Length: 531
Image 1: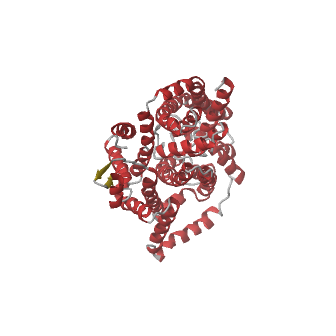
Image 2: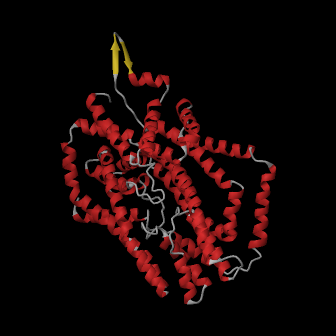
């Protein structure tokens, strides 16, 4: 690959991956979508589909929850695709490089987070000066920081590393390359186990087994099992719902009519839309000191300008919203909406609304709302469509990435807008009403049930343990894998997932143990003739 090609490709990769922190969390950098995009650019869509889907499954349960920065699936998927195509369209090459690339990218993300700490202190200085424009510019400096952190090593890897990678691959003995293929079939079990750890498996394990049974004995696909799980959850809620429970919703409507519509509003739809647009940049300056505080402050600036006309009032509000904040980028918009409502009440001197109350409300809400975002949007919603899309992409179907990206983009748009809109309209009473009527608990419980059934089905479809051992007794040949599957089909896949889950629960860095075991079993198993 020549200098110009490496430069253009590196820019494309850096721009795509920038969305993960910089401009909106659209999911276009996930391997299932970005892999085929890179494949299309390089003229080998099929390799892009296969490598992207494989790396997606490998990293499916490896999600950045809270302040964690796990090995980066996004850049691993794209660079793995590049190296697979450079080496003659050999998917096993890219898949084998996905782990070291992901770990390197993890270090790069952590480096960027640390650089961004300096942005916080520059923003503090500009806030004290009342220089809102400089505060905004400081926050947006996170864009070039993340871009450069990913562009430079990506360019060096592609331009300088391709020949080295090719030489290493050509020197690999067959047992290694075949072993890597086996390992790529085991690696999705790591992602499945990570999901079990996040989804309260100890309590809801039966639904995991139920999904497994539906996939194995009824041969239903993931989409069908998802729909069955959803129907079960809705039936449980409907049958268990007493008529008097709906009083909560009636009073909720009364609250909307009386306390919202009769209040003289200062904040208009234009201001809410400005906040909505800015919310796509909420993670641009994410850092280890205050996480997304400056992004939250950036989104609140239209409201601050609208409500407060004196510099001292604006400075106080800016300080208030540059405090520590960490929430899922979608559900965090509900906190923005509620904060806008509270700021409006404060500006209108509403009794009981104080600056301390606003800060306390933000702190109280970001935890549970982040939990919903991480467990429902990250661990369930994205995973369901990633599983469906990856399954199609593994078969070379170009609709796989589309099936994944369309609902995720729609979720990003609609959830951000409606969280802000209704968070503002109903204020903190919305969350209190939901909590009082146990809607949040039911929502998380239902999402967990659906998610576990889907993971149970996925474990069978995506975790491959191709044991090749067989024995002959006279003219009768006994194939071990066929014998095992005749007892309980797919049981080996489930046992590997559960084994990895046990490791993850017991070990702090169990993910790396599981990944290392996958490669060890694949290569050593091939060497010993087990596979």
